[in-house]
Length: 156
Image (tube, rainbow, N blue to C red; front, side, top):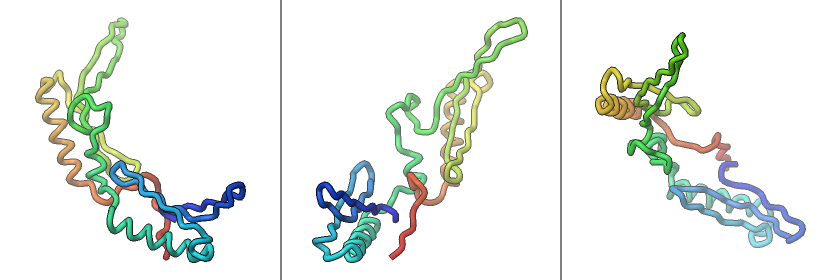
């Protein structure tokens, strides 16, 4: 069940359902002990009600919002746009390098599109601008809600 797990620890005599969701960097956790709720089934009902209330109050990120989150390792200043170097060797052994600005964006879950723009053809600044523009266009096509893992059943 999405956001709900079972705790059965005989050593500490702990038997409960745990609701645990992460929303925008904050963990939302609450336990529903069997003893307090007078049984395993009633504790589960309370946990589901609490989880559903949390989902209403704190909806998950949209896939576009998630795709726009800036990571710590971002060096370009634009999420989803990075400078890429491709090395290759000529027949005589000479090493050549081609530089590209690459834009990427999600399509369906687990899939994404990359589009490269050559610095040699367009110039470094123009290639960067083209990559940013391609990413903006790509993100306009992204739909749905982001789930870190495959969403479980929301059975009631």
